[in-house]
Each structure stands twice: as C-alpha cells, then as structure tokens.
Length: 237
Image (cartoon, rainbow, N blue to C red; front, side, top):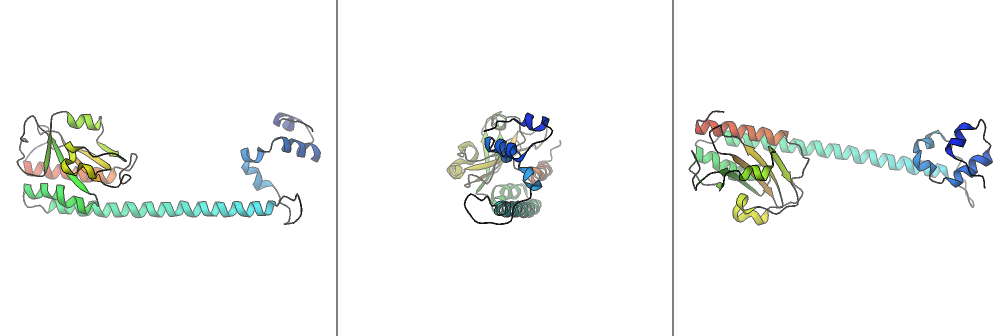
C-alpha cells in the first residue's frame, strides 16, 4: 500500500486515482478534519450493491441534520425572547406595586411578600447589616438582620450574584431556607450613612437562577428599590 502525507499531496504536481485512494484509505478521518470538502464533491447516483458507498444518502442525512439544528436554534431564540419578555412584564408589575405603597411598612411588605408572587419565586427577603438587634432608621417586620461585613463575605465584591443547585442559608431565609435550591442576591444601596442591605430571591428549582444569567432587568428593579427606599427614609446618596 502506498503511504503518503498531506505534504506529499500538496507538493506533487499530479496524482493518479490509485494514489489518492491509497492515501485516503490510510487516512480514514480526513473528511472529519475537512468537512467542508464534502460540499465540493459530486456524489454518485443512488445505487445498490455490495461495497457501494451511497454519498447521496449521506448528503441527504447531512441536510436533515443541518435543518434540525437550524430549527432547534430558532426555537431556542424564540423561547429565550419569550422568557425575557415574560421577565420584563413581571419586573414592570413589581415596580408598579412598589410605587403603590402608601407607607414605609407597606413598601417593605411589598418587597418581602408581593414580589414573591409577581416574580414567580418561592421566597423573598431583605437582609440588612446592623451592630445590634435594631436596624438604623428601620423599625418594621419582614427584614433579616445580620452582623456587619456579612453581605460582603457572601457577595465577594459582586453587585448581583446568581447561584444554582445550592442549599438555602438560614441567615438569609430563616425557616424557609430548606426550600431554597437556587437564588439571586442583589445589593441594595440605601444611602451613604445607611447600613449595607441585600435583596434575596430564592427558588426551590435548582436551575431557576444560574451563573451567567443576564442582570439588566434585575438591576433595574434594584435601582427602583433603592430610590423608593431613600424617598421613604429621606436619605441621600
């Protein structure tokens, strides 16, 4: 059997069919490394018989596979667009609900109760750092209190943190921690002289929140919460 290299094929002026066949037989994976070459070949007409390679069937199967891949890609794009639109609608409804609050306690209740249903999550909490058992400027229920620097330890310098396939933290969710399997944590900047705060959304679905998810819509919600928070507490940036 004649053994040839790709360099031999490119350097030799002419090649006969025997040499090409021999080389291809010794390099059976050649088309795998050069799949674009298939588009330049002319397949034989469909034949039947022993040891007959049906390139026509191969090309048909390839076209079917390409069509399936294109349809799947289009389906993913449509589903992603629909998912984003649904999320945008939920965020808008959540913002309107927060703006409808007629007092500070109602505003906090909207965050920790109404947003849970509006955003299709299982639990929502507001976590605020404090040195003692009271939160400066805030005297209401529905808020979790943690020691200073706790939020930074959780967030590691990030403003928004998506986590999947986790166990809920009791310091964040209290008795509801056992339900949480994925979460998104968002820093809330109430003001220069206010304590560090965190809004947490938890889900029992391990994959509802995942690293790498977009943050534009949740960032918008966080910004609205910050502004409304400051208006109720009369704080400044």
